[in-house]
Length: 136
Length: 138
Image (cartoon, rainbow over all chains, first blue to last red; front, side):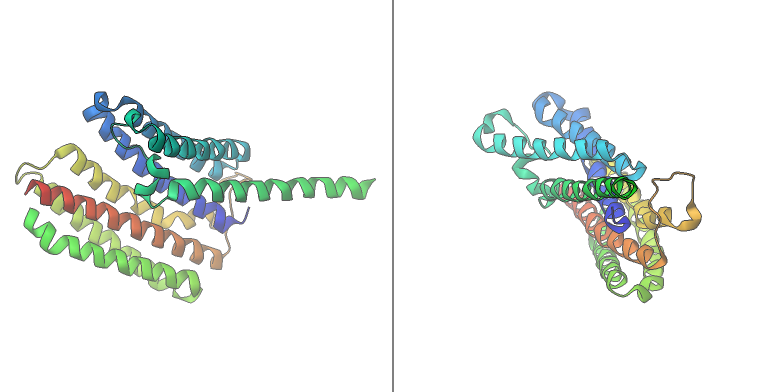
């Protein structure tokens, strides 16, 4: 992966992890009983953001790919459920409204990350196949 | 202290974040301006120190919600190390990790520029949230 894109993704995920971690820590420590599902999802999202940032830094492509896919599925699921089953959500999560409270970054970031990771994987596969084809 | 934050520090932080964002954009577009960005980053560290000191002082001056205020103050500080994230990609920062991204000098300038833009926006949001909290409690 282009190193600039990789570090920019690490940075964006670190900032999101920080935001989600702060939000969920405050919500869970002060008013968890008001919306346990929403606050737990915010905490899970913080852990996922942190895991993706570390995976991108350590070059753990599969972990980053799986994390981004889970994150995208989470944003789409929670965002959609927020509209069709609003009674389930007494308070907002990081992924409510497809991440609208965060400028839709929680929706856009996993799409960008998945695209970058899949392009990178395809290139690495091609590089792996090319020497084998040359040898034969 | 609350008045000092709302009247002077908050507008000052917003100006500093705008300068940081613009210096980051300039470094992204024109690598030669990277040196100026490093000066702006140093200034931004000082502005953040002043912001946090005034916030801590505000905690003693009324019914300020402590947990969330301290949380946002910590967030303002936690954003600062991310401004230097490109240093981790410098060739001389080798740590034996073969997967570590290694950046050329022009790439370091561009990553620093992108980081400054992202952190500028994030720091402005943190300052705005702190202003909302303090204004609500005042």
